[in-house]
Length: 254
Image 1 (cartoon, helix red, strand yellow):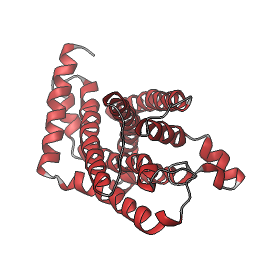
Image 2 (cartoon, one colour; image 1 turned 90 degrees about the horizontal axis):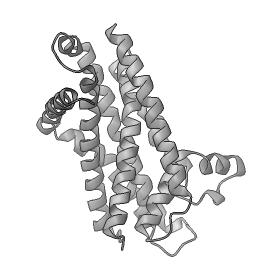
Image 3 (tube, helix red, strand yellow; image 1 turned 90 degrees about the vertical axis):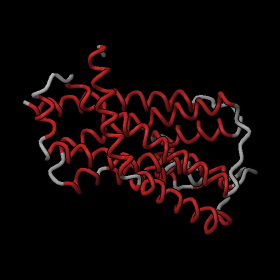
Image 4 (cartoon, one colour; image 1 turned 180 degrees about the vertical axis):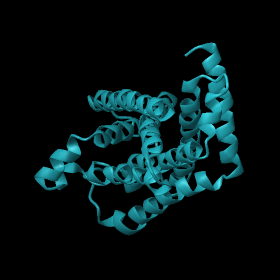
């Protein structure tokens, strides 16, 4: 990315962030659903769920809740992108000396910032509910890096949805399967308690390796091969989604 493109991206990211600051309910709404799920699972179902470990249930299920937080938040990226397309703002930008890539990156980086703020809110509530970790500063950085890469990968999927959707509802509805995916993983119960076909899917989809990696980092345990599998999934999704998003953007402007 050239210096010109970086400067344009910074300007457009600032524009998008100002919109969020004027409407902080976006971040609050994004955090409400995962917090509600956390309350229900810990205080209603938690006592009946056997995770096969001695750790508290809030410690066990928090990584999955964090992924649901991000999956909920990226829907707003698709929504805002769709509104910009419908409002003709992209055409206006096209007539100005602005790097084309900066228009998309402005939305993506805004998503990264807003979703990490939502994640921080959820973690703060988890601490109030009893979440405890002895994770080192390096482990926390690793968790932040995984969540940032997860957010970037899913946000580029949101960009595709925002550019391709025909209606506002269609732009944000794509995130529903992503929100549901952690429920068919190791996020809330061990996969070996599931029926064989479901367990096979749960063990071989990306969320399980990501959840296992974050859980191990919080518990100060070896991450094993899960971290490499998680990174391979995330980098792969990021690269493919980015390529399709750029292609969709070019088609819309052509």
